[in-house]
Length: 278
Image (cartoon, rainbow, N blue to C red):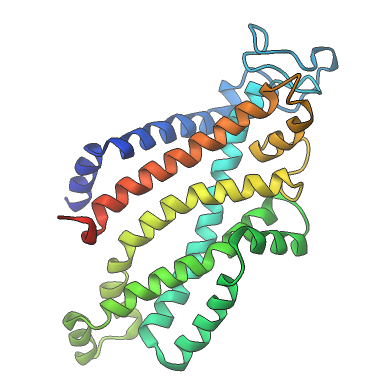
């Protein structure tokens, strides 16, 4: 019932509705990429190189004669997958660290938070760049690097929520009745962390996709001939004057995806954050 109420209120938030609509279209493109793309995204046709948008190639062709529309559609699947896996890694590692650190406190909290502070001392994209350089370039390593770079954000967020929750009377009552720590964390503490986690993860998806595209643009992410948006931007930068469409359409894909994530995240924050309610 509570989730149904949130969905109804979300439907009244214009920004969130627009974000959901854009994400819905992108999700359909990603899921239906093998059937919706006009051509094989990696098949080269040298005689059709640098064809402008038209009836034969709706979004033009690149320098190798590959269909840009097909590559953009398949790129949606790759970029959304990268974002989801990266955020899952960040949440999967950061949330437990924040739970343990905030609940137990003391020396354990001090040690864990100093490690997090060291990671926070580096800008996220630079930390991801350093990690993927050590792991060697590749799309899988980009997901790991972007996810690890975002771990401090989730760890600090969860810790802050746990610090305020663990002092509530119902948590102290559960302890007094002999409840085990793991059960208390699962039953009483974690539900208070879910809402801010959902908001942060939604906003983080856009950031993860953007970071992965930046790493691919630098040659540290997906490798040719993978149709990934950041890689497509890099491949088209030498042809911006005579073939603007090679970089423009994947760039629009990145922009729309990040915009949709931010609109949806802002809507969820407005609905789920009690501090913003009048």
